[in-house]
Image (cartoon, rainbow, N blue to C red; front, side):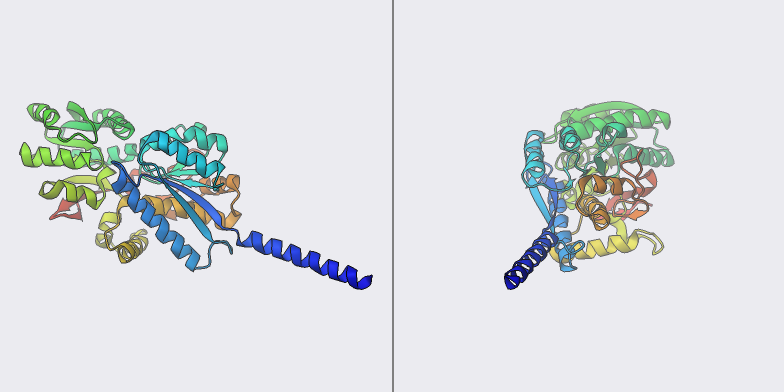
Length: 383
């Protein structure tokens, strides 16, 4: 009888130990929704690559508090309906504890109600300031790219420095372009910069000659284009190669990837745009707080994928690490992860030094942006 009781007790203890071991070994799951196909694929693929590289590095180092990291990645194709379907699966089927992405502003805006209702932390990799504002209605939403309002402010400073006071703007007919246009229309007049022409185009338009011809007739001192690739490259080729417009072309921070240079070709030389410091990491002074990280991320990415990283992959690196840092403290509890992200201070990322708060879910200032100039097909620090 006693022997049977001892055996039963040992079995119970072993069962509890095995159960605890299984729980300890269950992976921490983060979801990701990136545009791996479609017009924004040149942004989403570096994000996916970065996620896979980071997961490999974290797990090789022992995971997170004894748990393996599992990043579940779905392709949104840059489409709002597809994105909502993929995010619904991440929330209700995969049971992830946080979601990184989407890639685009429109798709990020499309899932705000979903993540808010599910009470799951979401860190977008898109630019529009509307993704995180008003913060009171976006409690569960954060983002890592510099907002379009910060990029617009940096461009306005540059234009004033160069004494360029009459400009034309050309923007895409999508949420990214619309938000950028809205910011420029407010920021430029405040800085004493007159907008002499405004034009719009679709990202997939084969050319924008009609719009640029109208802009040329307005005789601006510079053109500001709010777009990503391939649309931004189309504007660049049409303006520089076809219409021979010999005035500065300033792009948004949406072209900070090599795909833009490849598509624009020789016409890209001389183009300027605001960006985080990643494209010119090697040119930064050693005292810059981001340089060590930026150089390491660049080396790791090039070693694994045999290509230059882009700021978009950097946005994903920042987002995943914000979640991972929170998980190291609180595990995979969604509400606690959200609270930890919001309390983050002095986090050195690829996009800047982040300081979040209940009133700021982007955590950056315009000082995180520098002006980059494309010279001989390469990114250089604009002087």
